[in-house]
Amino acid sequence: MGFLVAVLSVSAQASLPDLFPFPNESALLQKVKGPVLRGLAGRAPYFHNGSALTLNDVVKFYNQRFNLGLTNQNQQDLVGFLSSL
Ligand code: HEM
Image (tube, rainbow, N blue to C red):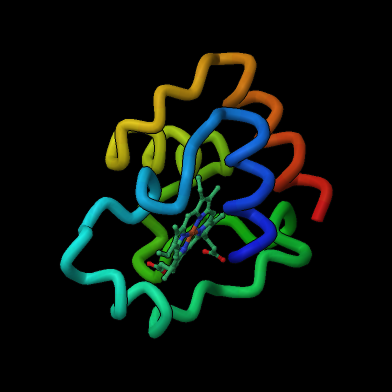
């Protein structure tokens, strides 16, 4: 996930605290293990409960849930990037 956060920091000026906005829980962040994203495009739906049918839905989810302020272009770019893994 570290590299993803780095990518986002550049493309949307989002920082780690933006993506995980719980200042008193920062120790928890180091305990979260994100899923492997390689080959993502070939294994929809996403999240453990399949709640995101497409990568577009995933990006929309993060944008809304964490108020990232991604533009439509940012979102398209991110979906393109995730699709390429
Ligand atoms: C905009 C930033 C992010 C993007 C684009 C992103 C992308 C993704 C994608 C595509 C999945 C689905 C993987 C799958 O179903 O195979 C996922 C799941 C997950 N991500 Fe992220 N991620 C982001 C931020 C984060 C952050 C900051 C954390 C940790 C604090 C995190 C932790 C997780 C976890 C734990 C899951 C599994 C959730 C589940 O299965 O229900 N993600 N992420």
